[in-house]
Length: 184
Image: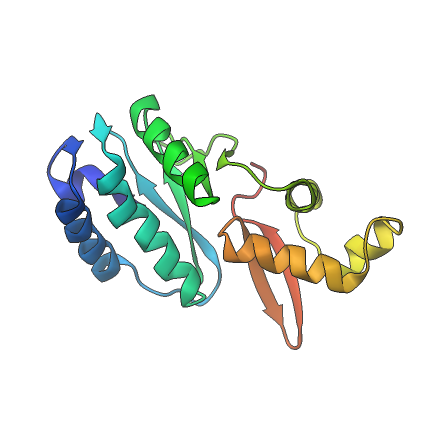
């Protein structure tokens, strides 16, 4: 969990330059783990964050994590409506999606919410992974025979991983997929 308030020392976040400064800080703070896991950006205490700030920090950080196939999967935590509105507008305009939730003082995670939207097939695949808890393309293909072949399921699953919405777990030559937040 990375506190944005502590990383920036401000509760009003604006400007591309300040966003780039936070990006550098986030890149220094993030460490690669052996296994896939969520990396929460905690927006508790942040009153406002502008689109330019969020574009240059949060979205850039998410894009870097996904481009290098990091084991860290970005989740936005405890953001207020002002911040969520700015993020939602940004991801909609870029055709992206972000995972959000609330985390209380005990570390309990609320059910997740998607900011942005998925196409119908991606949404079906995301919902199935959330429901099953862990799966692979072969299981999905066998379970929904009329829906798609394993290759199509592989493509959909890989697409959700590249969006940072589900985790990929390599097991030798095969891959399994699970929600970033179990039980969410």
